[in-house]
Image (cartoon, rainbow, N blue to C red; front, side, top):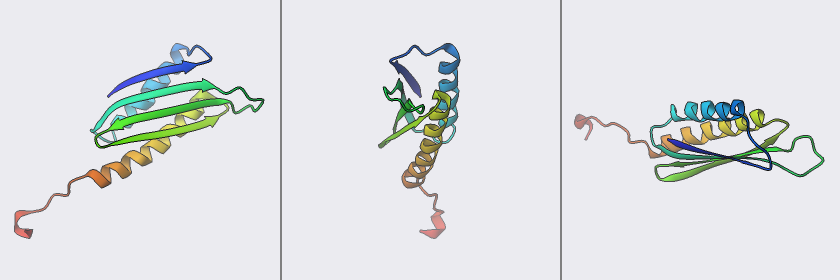
Length: 106
């Protein structure tokens, strides 16, 4: 799976980019059919301290998966978004999975 990372209204440092890549690589372990990933991190212009937004979109075989989370840090936003995507990936895998049937059962 190829991953594209964009940062809007700030410059992401290497530590944050490595963190994102690590989280996206972990998502690959849940399903082989993940094709492409796009991560957008941006700062919201609000007085609220929870102004760091992470949006993650994953193209899987047959479906697009999306999660958007907002919190006080980018790491927390990415972690929350990846947890939500992990659930979506598992559901997608269950729905699209082919069950193995023995020939005797047919």
